[in-house]
Image (cartoon, rainbow, N blue to C red; front, top):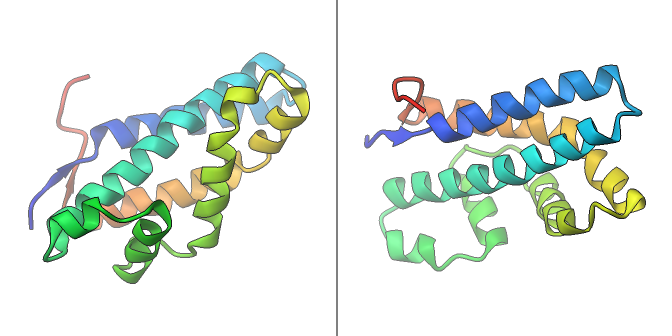
Length: 141
């Protein structure tokens, strides 16, 4: 099985988790909340892109994977045992799509509310990708 360099996802997720730990200790700190939202943005992007790369490597037709909608990609990830529940990933995408509006306190709170669940699901995805042939931790930043 072809190895997939998961270092960027692993580092992004670790950064998000550290930020969440700090923010949960001081939940009124808007700057920490905003930093966590930004970390969510890039961790989310890396999560679905690594999922797509793994599916392109594992499934018989990489071009078919490349043409999949986001929802189809998430469903395929679940079918391949890389993702548990699909519905939360659709919610995460919806929240990701409103992150450019986090200057709005209500929208920022809406996005921030999903961050702990996302971190858990992203961790589960990372672990599934590692079991499937991921390579991480051996590359320099």
